[in-house]
Amino acid sequence: MLVLVNDQIKSREDVRIDLEDRGYQFGDGIYEVISVYNGQPFLMDQHMQRLERSARELMLDLPVSIGRLKEKVQALIEQEGRSTCSVYLQVTRGAAPRRHPFPTSATPVLTGYIMDSNPPRDLHAEGIRAITTDDIRWLRCDIKSLNLLGSVLAKQKAVEQGCQEAILHRSDTVTEGSSTNVFIVKNGTLYTHPANHLILHGITRHAAIQLAEKLNTNVKETPFKREDLYEADEVFVTGTSIEICPVTHVDNRAIGNGQPGDVTKQLQRAFYDLIVEETAMKAE
Ligand code: PMP
Image (tube, rainbow, N blue to C red):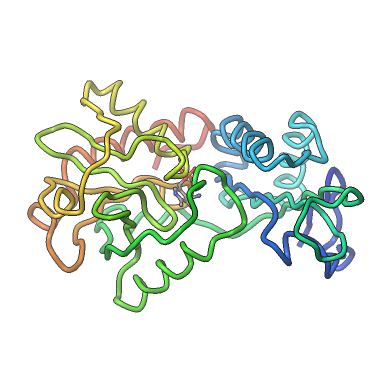
């Protein structure tokens, strides 16, 4: 496996992660996951902009310019000879003796590598099942930080109940999924939580909103309740890895008729078209 370290591509065996790296000890860092189709990173500029924003919010200096990083991501994909996969990038504040305040001595470190991934077309057709659970995360969910325990615990709870996603709520307001953004469809209108500090500003969420608007579907970025989920005509989630995926059951209750809905299917098709258009991938 090849690993990008700052702007150098190395073999995994030659990469050394310091025991006192603040990413390892404090979760003091940020990350991005970018899907690659046909050897082309999809919506890379949007991911890079979010990486820059997360860094800014944590007062973290990126060790590589975005221009150089984009070149290196492309080189990594080519050198690994990959077509469909994803790229994981993370930046930590670097290594220093373990004390909470920002160290003056540490230098941020960027690492990146290719992960196996395949769009889950079977789930896209069948839909997934979700549970709801309390959103116990911190109040800066807009920063894509390495602190993922709230999401890890929620996803584990979903898996233990035979479900693929956990939909999170604060009091009774639905925020997002443990690794996805959540939409409901009611009487032809899409509803999703506003992009504030309580959710990750998903790249796929944004693409779905733009596609819906192109299709003349009304979109309201407004909070909704857990009860609204159960009573929705359709529910779907969005994310880089899962793309746009219908949710057919929430807390064991069928959504609508318990089958993927028409609005969701229409958006899925528009999203596949966008991938083909952006990455010159052959349509399936
Ligand atoms: N919310 C959370 C909490 C996530 O972890 C993710 C996946 N990174 C998303 C939403 C979806 O974001 P994106 O579409 O940018 O992958």
